[in-house]
Length: 372
Image 1 (tube, one colour):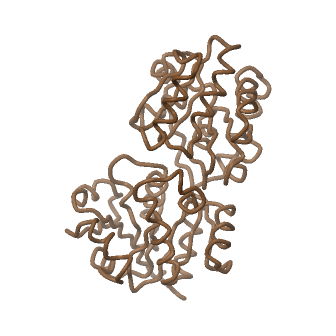
Image 2: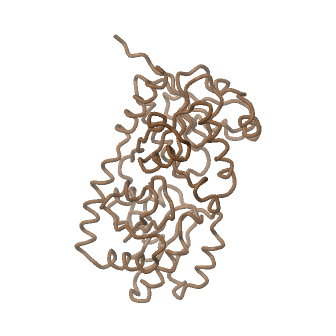
Image 3: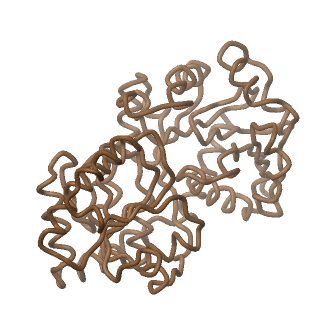
């Protein structure tokens, strides 16, 4: 008997423009769902200007759900009214997967992805639309949405904060795509150094980059060959980061690169000696897993979900311990056997995160929600 093709609507707004980590995860999920013979996928985007470019961001088998309706207007209406329903973008569907904190009104069951709770736990580290999330998430939960998280750590936080039963919060980790074959030599040319510590991501308070600058300053005093490369777009943490740079004794060996396209990013990761990820809070942690996949040792913090995601394949340090961070960086830079263990363990750790597993788990969840 032929399996019923489940009609799934997924929020693909994050695929447009510069992709954050959520955009990268959504891209992998959309690709995996589009390859399923038992799923009829429609990807929607809440945007006026970008609606014409959604189609080119999707696999051929996925339908694009667009509508000439301003995003600003939905932001004003959805918290107050159950209108306009997302079916105006997607047509009738069996389940709606809201991948980025905001769930639209719909007649169908909703799966709401909450990658992390920084908007509740660390509002002082957030800005812009993120500060609207507490109200929007609460509305979605009150309307009956089931919550999806990337990790068991965040799932436990969500259950506690929103007083939800176990069956209302389901952790399913995202996958990693195939290894991205960057050119180490080109990465070293971009870094302007043969040995470098790499930090990737938007310059924002949660990434704890001032602490990394201070820790690197200690390392640089004893290692004259290494530099620090900070790559990623500017964000709300730019002022504190700039002040840390101004105070650094070895400022000339800290190289600031802005936003990079995928090829340059892959090259920079491939050529790195160490990836540093000293965040104050993370709901998952995609860059360190990508570094592990590329054979680059990782030094990260013990904050949030990072111990769960990285396991014992990274050196983990308290994010408030500058001296501990500098010591960890120095060890990984210089200790050959340690580097070898981290590289071997990192390959195994990253290999556990597959899109086949993630998509299969989510389709089972979709079918359960549609049937319920």
